[in-house]
Amino acid sequence: MKLYLVPNGTTQERKVSARLAVRSLSSRFTCLTDEDTLRWLELPGIAAASPDEADMICAIGGDGTLLHAAHDALSSDKPLFGINLGNRGYLCAFHRDEADLVSAETVCALQEIPRTLLSFPWEGQERIAINDIILAKEDFGVTIRLEATIPEESYHGAWQGDGLILSTPTGSSAYNASAGGPLLLARSESFVLTPLCPVDPAPSVVFSDSHAISLIPDARPASVKPSLYVDGTRLGKLREPLIASRAARFLRLMQR
Image 1 (cartoon, rainbow, N blue to C red):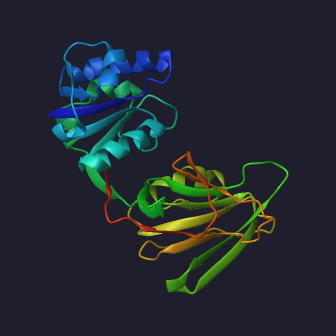
Image 2: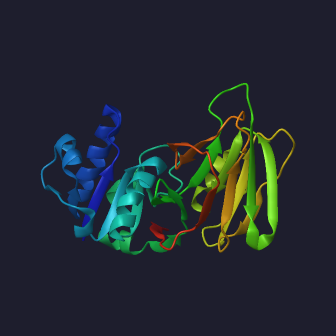
């Protein structure tokens, strides 16, 4: 079995942990990775290749590393599993002390659970969110006003506060949960919209993932425009309504 490895090498300590895990994996799998990772791994027997040449993608780190690896899994349509070397590792199938137990047998015993994704247009291209889409203010001392509509549900909501989180079931255990939003089961076929520190108390809104939602910044010229963040990465200012819906593809996440 061929694994395409995406290890976390952002610090020296993480590189050391990743090398130990990769050394263990390379004794039981044919291991591939990109050329930049190959240089800092400095391990024999690992080949530079593309994700298309592997059977599965393996993230070695925490949930953030798995989200990074998910883009390789999506582009190559390969199953993805993670080995957690971080803190929570909620999305990872294996944990640090189980690295030596990862084999073709244990990997094949994992269950593939298709994960729903959010899709939206940005600068003329389709963008994908695995965890969440967040509209949020950039500065303390101010609030922003945002609206959301779900036409198929005849729903309209308006909030003033720090922002809004639109989350997939996968991302519902991340920022959404920290903001008091509900956990969604992986197969729940729903999304959740959670206000961030609203001025007036406001509950989260759970709705069917078959419906599109429009996120609308305040149209007044003097208002503070929110910034758009996707899976923790800032894309820029949102100056017009953003329409998000369920993506046509799914993330093939492997879990126990």
